[in-house]
Length: 172
Image (cartoon, rainbow, N blue to C red; front, side):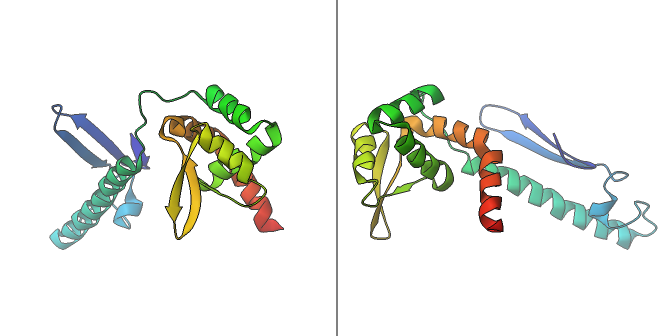
């Protein structure tokens, strides 16, 4: 997999318990990592390049492992996106309120209740779609485990739309 120009990341599964990770720098293509020409005219220059390349490779590998740690694992009984939307509208009772609550979940990954949303939030909680979580002495609700995958898929599909909405808010 190409990480950026002149740098490839290769991951091998050695066994079911061991993984080998390689970062390959193609020096003719990645002069930006080295900071200039890729012809070494002294041992000191070569050592400096190797140190820079080693640091770049370590950063890439650490970024990959951080990304893998942050990735959610979803239960086998995950609900499809259509079922998630159907369940939300069914529990809340109307499209407008369900859309508002879904928007909150997509943008913030949680719902913080107020007086207007309280009946709808309780309906989602009673249906098992969201679960209460105490945070900073304030009750908020997060998505139930079986609906996490559907919310993640919706979030990925709506990222460009959410980015446009955020830009509009900043421009106002």
